[in-house]
Length: 168
Image 1 (tube, rainbow, N blue to C red):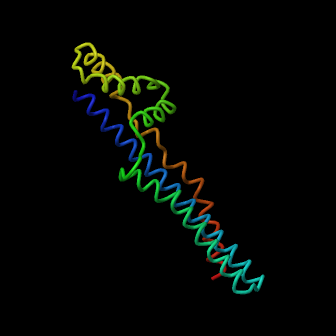
Image 2 (image 1 turned 90 degrees about the vertical axis):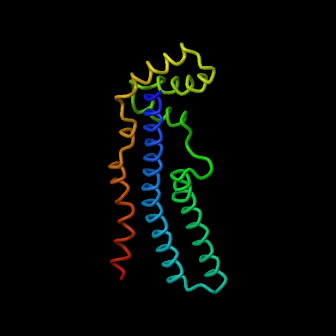
Image 3 (image 1 turned 120 degrees about the vertical axis):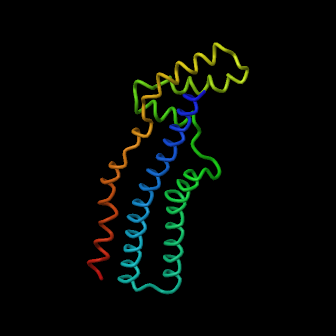
């Protein structure tokens, strides 16, 4: 059972890293979109010289859009990272890992399904779990997440920051 517990720890580590990656992407998206939306609304208001009702509408539109973006791209990944509410299950994580590692594919999912069945304490099932755990132990599931892919998103966050720096 030590190998199975080790694989479950590696799976939990993968889930945490998955949510950290989503949170990093979310922060970059949030900064980019909220600042661009703020700049756009400010420019529209400045050049439009609108009355109070349209300014109020633009203000509440800005608040609603930014709140929605904050909820979708930051709060939800934070909830998943700290396992508050619904988060990624081991089977869903196994499917994601299987898409990244061709040698793992269904082995991990089968192992998780066998672990659920092993409550009967069947020796054949335990032997199969041990064999599959031994075959999967050298695979590092966390390597399926690559934080460096987020560098491409950095330019979208730096663009509105650059505009604000230029304006100030």
